Length: 91
Image (cartoon, rainbow, N blue to C red; front, side, top):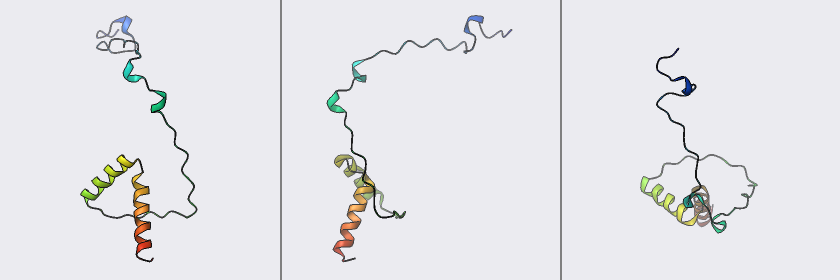
């Protein structure tokens, strides 16, 4: 017999007590208008190639902030900017 456990607490350490049942509180409720679904991303016709680049931290911070505000992914922002730059340069 284990001297550190009471027979009624079999299967759980003596220091843990049973957890109370979960309660539904107002902060767990979500309004129907707050929930939205986005259409699936379009399938790219072109093959993707991984490109690694080094970017200043300040630029990454600005990118993260803009992506958050505009709700556009960082990847999409970079792809658009790169495409516009290449078009501008005549490439």
